[in-house]
Amino acid sequence: MPRIDVGKAPADYFKLSSKEIVERFLTVLEASGADEKTVKSYRAALTDFFSFVGWKNVKDLSQDDVLRWRVERLKNGFLGEKYGDRRSRETTLYYYVIFLKRFFEWLGLELKVPQVRRPRRKEVQVLKQDDIVKLFNASRDLLDMLVLALTLETGLRSEELLSLKFGDIDMESREIRIRNAKYDEERVVVIGDLTYQLLQQLTTLKRFDPEERLVPLSYSGLYKRLKSLAKRAGIDPFKVRPHILRHTFATEALKRGLNIVSLQKLLGHRDLKTTQVYLHMMREDVKNEYLKSFRSILTPIQSIQIAPTPNYSAGYTQIPTSRLCPYCNSQIPHNARFCPYCGARIQ
Image (cartoon, rainbow, N blue to C red):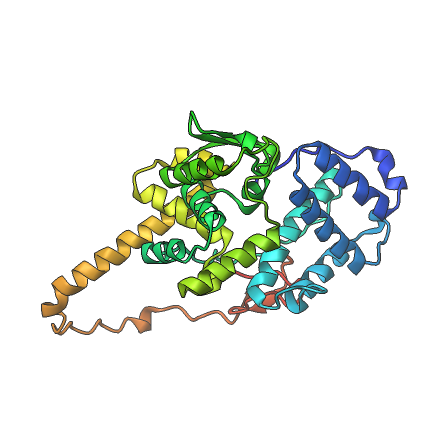
């Protein structure tokens, strides 16, 4: 996540109430270039923390307040959380801790917020070529096909797709200008062959106003359309969502030889590390192919008996029964997964 420079809060802010200070911080955040979703996420994190401590005055906050909030959220989750599984909870808390740290830094408060280990990223889902063909065959109209073609040939985010206007399309140069991009950074994507054909068909039907939306659907309308399309194609609807179409575009682009920096620009990623997730998937494909090939090669010699390893246990040192928490320095069991005193997750 790109770090946004918000500077330092004026000293007289400490005279304000906690709610006023939070609002001032969010205003500064937005003025510093944070997009609407980022501001909304910060608001959710700060509201959750201050609700937990009873909106006490900022200058009265203690280290104990921070640790109690962290332990409570790690153990019992968030109020009204949509998903109750521990992985989702830890992911939310991971980001909330980052947001709270930045808020404290802005105020100049020396309060430590022990970080939560970020859960391992779930494997990125992509569509198989057979599924893509099934989806196009199940399309009922030009709009179905256009939604599929645009996302699979450009990797647009759903918000970007739904905000496209006819005036953003340049058929002559085969380019689409993305104006409503994440981080408010405009970019240009290339019109693929199938998208080009569909746009030609569409523009022959009638004359469109430059300000008219290309995909006249709401966010929920897009999801419902893809869900219906998946059902008609005989595919699990959960596997046919806008971001999965985007993932499919990215992995296919790399397989076909597009370099990672060009892909980063097309996807609109600020950080190359975000794009490198797809390289990891490519490595997994290579590894699977390798294992499949060498498994068959080595099958004839797998029955060879390997001599047992000598027992060196006599030279082992005794396993310790306890250790110190790296965050609060308390004595904890050596195999503890989290500190019972400060709640820090132990790696």
